Image 1 (cartoon, protein in one colour):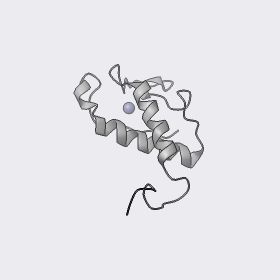
Image 2 (cartoon, protein in one colour; image 1 turned 90 degrees about the vertical axis):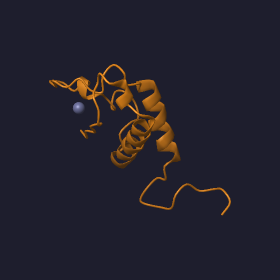
Image 3 (spheres, helix red, strand yellow; image 1 turned 60 degrees about the horizontal axis):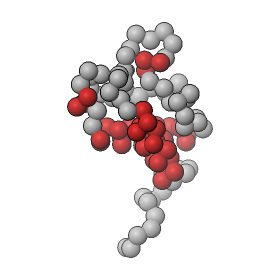
Image 4 (tube, helix red, strand yellow; image 1 turned 135 degrees about the horizontal axis):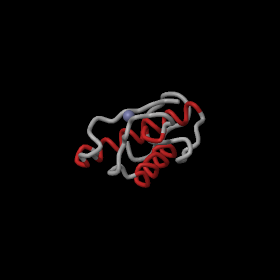
Length: 92
Ligand SMILES: [Zn+2]
């Protein structure tokens, strides 16, 4: 498994910022692409769901629907393979 910890506390919803969701989703999408991990809730789970854990994160305020949408969006917009230039398109 690959673990990602977020800064903040489970009982402080204000800690779960838009920037955190976006950055975490990009990180998860990249890791899943690299290791061929399916983008679903069977494979992307909360620390609280890990068997035997005593952790409660990401907690009741974490919006999994929102997060998984961001992960899937990041996965489809991210270039596949190694490092490349940024998003294509647009005037230059
Ligand atoms: Zn944790």
